[in-house]
Image (cartoon, rainbow, N blue to C red; front, side):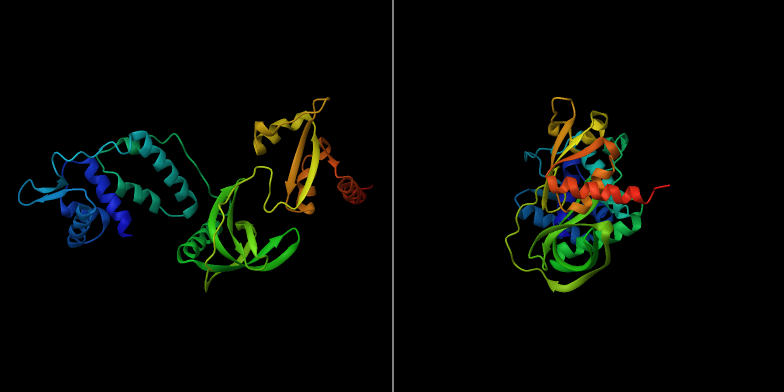
Length: 302
């Protein structure tokens, strides 16, 4: 896109005293004529860029014009690079790294020097998630509706949504958007989506609310429950929800109040703690969970 190229050219000019049009054309993979048009656009934006012809000539910011050449520090650039690398881990390409190479000059070696932070956002089935992310990205950019088959604890269904955000949280990838069936905003886990297609339908004009994340809320919260955990699993609670949510009873057990999407997935989560978790409220959930445990035990009677 032109705006990305203009930012890239300006970034190069901030870091180098002078650069030729040929160099910029090769770097951004466009013609020399396009680069000169871009320089004119930068001038029109109020930043005086001059071009000198002949031996030793080139393009530079006009002498005497005060422009902060430390717009991004080495630490800033390294933080950006780490983020772009993490996106490459799930995109299946090197395009974000290539974008970084275009934005920062080769002379700034500090950008490439520090590799001690590695963020891998890919799942075990990297290609499947990458393809879904790329399709959803196109849908968001083109404001088009996506259609897919979704598998949830309540069964499978065909869904159509207006996608607005691709989200990585709770160690998984999700898409958040307006569900035309529920007529409300919902979040869907990418790994549970199948037969995903990009339709020709355009998203409606609507005031989209700001997305917010609640650590104790899985999807659209529909049930509430209080659970007591043995202190031996404190590490897991901290790992999933953080220290700030810890509350204790008089015996030193952890007591957590949950808002969950549905009972089935909530019960499955509690089962994962074995005897180290106990549903306290509401009473009807205690009874239903007890019946579930009895049915499980009946399958293992010897």
